[in-house]
Image 1 (cartoon, rainbow, N blue to C red):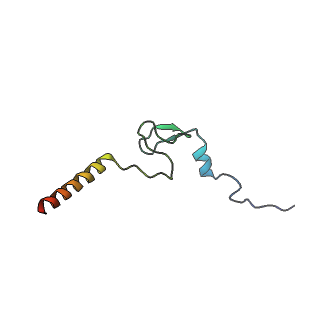
Image 2: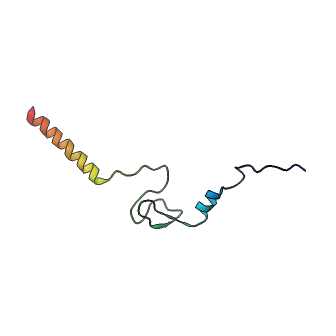
Image 3: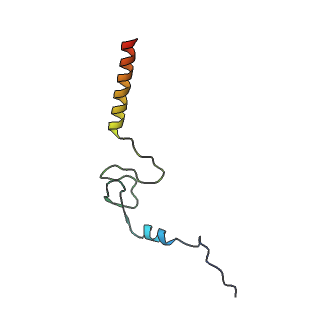
Length: 79
């Protein structure tokens, strides 16, 4: 009888078993307990999943638009 060595891809790793053993997960943004099958946190709107980019905050967009308006206004005054 040939004894076969265990292949690492034969089953889930201990880390996978720990990660997927519960039906809930915590939102990385606000810490709210969520079910595993949700894609968006109901509390803060954070998009769950590794392939999603983080949303740019509104205050950053407003600041960038304000700076752009100041630059254009300064250019028009000097012109």
